Image (cartoon, rainbow, N blue to C red; front, side):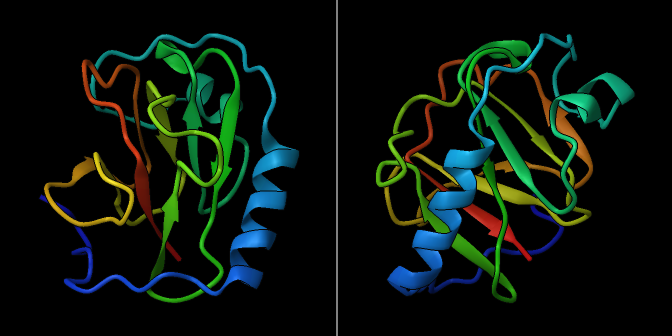
Length: 140
């Protein structure tokens, strides 16, 4: 269950904001060192080093915070639906770190509707199992 519910109607963000977010994502894309974390866990010092940003959802291409990193932050309140497909990250994310105090959510479709896969606030998920997100709800 999400700490902050995802709004029932999620509107797409104007292209200018998406462009700014994608630019930030490209600049934030970099290989990240490994840091083990069993299941949903409070944000550890090691995980925080892999995602040293404030109020950000960091997605990693590999489990245990390895591989390329995509960083997502919302510029609008209460949050933003980000198409991972449009960012070139459809079906790529395998682990995540959420440095925001509010929960983020990932979805198996490209428009942030349906069953949400929660990334609780100030926590990390080292392995999504078979879940592969196509979009993410990022709180402000």
